[in-house]
Length: 324
Image 1 (cartoon, rainbow, N blue to C red):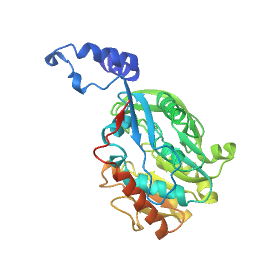
Image 2: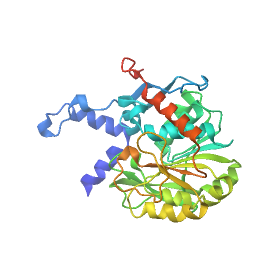
Image 3: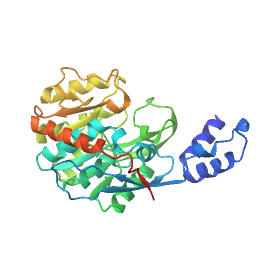
Image 4: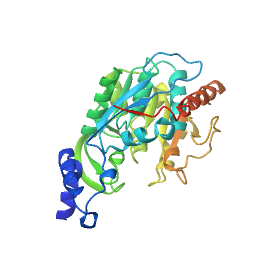
C-alpha cells in the first residue's frame, strides 16, 4: 500500500516525477535505472502543422505551437506522428461538420489539451468551448489557446447526467484516460471536480451548440443523457467515442433512437454508410469514434471530409514537426 501511494504521489506531481527520473537515469538498469533515451523531456515544445483543404479558405494559423509537460500522452503522440496518426478519420469529418453545420458553437467535451477545439478555432469563426476537468491539463489547454491567439474558452468542469461534485479518477495508464467512471482504469488517485449537465450549462452560457465532440472515457452516455434537451432542441452534429465497456453502445442507442439521429462509424475513407446498430466491439483505439447526425449526411459533406482527409495526410516527410 505504501509503495502504491508513493508511486501515485510521484506520478501526480511533475516536480517529483522529474526529480525521481533524474535519480533513476544515474542508476544501473539492473537496480531500477532508466534508459536516458526513453525519458521524456520535462517540458515538450514543438510546432504542429495544421491542415488546409484544397479549395478552402486560407485564414487561420499554419501551425499550432504546443508547450506541455513532457510526459503528457496527447502532445507526445502529436510530436511523434502529427495529425495523420491522431484519429484522422474523425478529424476530417469533424472539420467538415464545422464547415457545414448551421451557425453555432463547437463543444469539445473531454478535450484533454484541446486538439479538436484548436482545429475548430483555427479553421472557423465559431465560438469554441473546451471542457476538461483535470486542472493541470485544463491549464495546458488554456495556455496553448493563448499562445496561438485562438478564441477558445476552456471550461474546467466534467459534463455528466447530474450537477454537483464527483471524484475524477486519475488513470495510472495515461493522463488521457482520467474518468468519472469507477473501475474504468487502474487509479493513481482521485480529485474532486465540478460536474454539470450540458443542458444546464448551455442555458446559463446562452449559446447554441452546433457541433459536439464527446470523448470522456466511458461516461459518454451520461454526457448525452445530461444534454438530451440540447439534442432535441438544437440538433447538433455529435462525434462520440464508443467502447465496448459496460453497455456503453446499448445505452447510447437507447438515448438516441427517440431523437431520430443517424449513426455512422468513422472507419476507413468516407463516405460512410449509416449503421443500424451502434457497437464498440472490435474497434481499434483510433477508430472508436462515431458520428451521430441529426439528418442523413449529404454528399457535399462527405466530399469536404475527403478533402480534409487528404489535407491531414499530406504533410511531406521532408517537413518534420518542428521542435522549438
